Image (tube, rainbow, N blue to C red; front, side, top):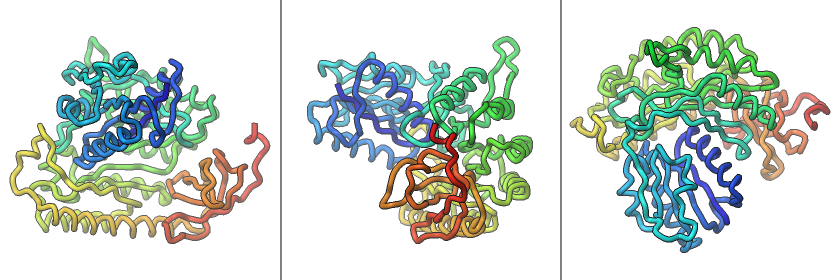
Length: 442
């Protein structure tokens, strides 16, 4: 029997989808591409924006046209938040909530009878941590170290969809990483909902026994692991000690992704973020002083309720002066059961669209400036496996997208390259500087 998977949303979702898919394969299922005809389609949903909701409906219609007799299963954040609503979408056969998604196989009726079921839960009852990591789909592996969030940002549904903050055991996470290394993985991305909040609490004292800095120190000791990357981390949790450690490490790469959301202190307070622009700026300055070649990505939300032209210009000017490398720009959308949904002075869609365009244009300028700064430098590149019209693509340690003339010897290997020029598609042409060592073929 064939099964296909599709992941919407974040790197954490990718790690969980990959782990769930391996359970199906163990049970004898044949995993196929989501674009192929399959008996079962499992969609790991996202709830961050309304676009994710629309994309889910589009995917359901698409696969039902491909195979009307297939079973369509929804798991993930949207499935947890809106189980009844999603179950009423034409073509959806099964909805599985946060506490059962890793056991989804047990809820699928292989005879395709009475599959129109909802298996959801109260999110407060989800207090377990499930180990998961991606393997086989990409050059890098996403390794989950933390789940859930205790923050109360006024626009966010993630705590409602994933529950309270909880973390894996350090020794088990390290064992997961060693397993990935033994299977040829050269780069691991540490991921979670709020990874800077990593820590295990003592059940008796209620005191956190470990923290994120301790975690990355353990990962830094793993033998034969070439590269480690930290996914998105909150600025108030990205301590100077963590930045210093990454600077000294030979495994952790020079790349941070740090959500900002707004460059207006007024809006940050409305969002109930746990920092102001002065702290954010100090983090960026600290990073770039130690690591001038470091790539810094930023999340920004435009059109938050109450965001005036003055507030937006504060964000724009703040970002212009920061030494950052790219932006992820999101237009605010109202979400049920969030505080921001009740805030007045909504920003019209056409204004949000215009502000998004302005910031995306700034992102392109920032990325080009960062790439230009690195031209003629030598950086290690982890190459992918696909031959794309005679080129092979990959990422430098500091997250520059590069391409080189295709050679099978480059596939899945980290090769020191010279960055030569920026192409029109904002990739950088690279030239391998060394012969491929024989050990890389083993």
